[in-house]
Length: 166
Image 1 (cartoon, rainbow, N blue to C red):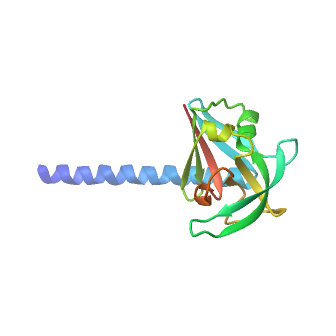
Image 2 (image 1 turned 135 degrees about the horizontal axis):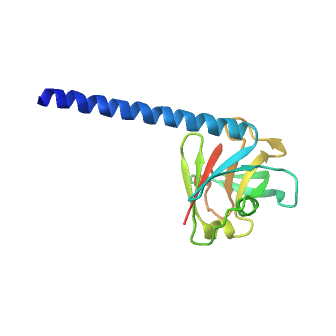
Image 3 (image 1 turned 60 degrees about the vertical axis):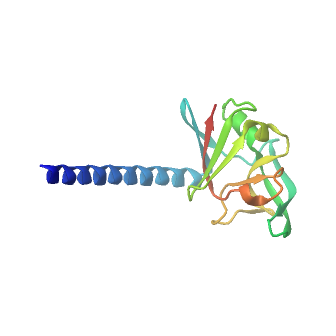
């Protein structure tokens, strides 16, 4: 009897793992479809919100910044994009200084921000152009740039999803 319970437990674990892998693939495919057409997905307690990224309007800016690496290398960069705070406002997502904001990249790398960082003017951007050119496939279509960080370690490439938590 114990032998059958072990087999049953292994089968149940394998079935659960298979289900989770399928769900992850479906979510990744949905994210890929959305970013291909210039959309970002926001996850909130109320569900998902899809935002269409726009280059038109007052909120889209070109700015200069420095990418600093821990080894001391400094690279001047010119990006074009929108402040994350304006994107959240346009998407109708409320947040404040204490809100947790997590940006998720295509490779599942997650960058955590506070609402206070996002509300700081000129600090957190979602960009789609570098030096006037659309981001390459490795970096884009959306990239996170944080001007206020001493180093570029929290900058994120290929942003696909943004999770908002109170």
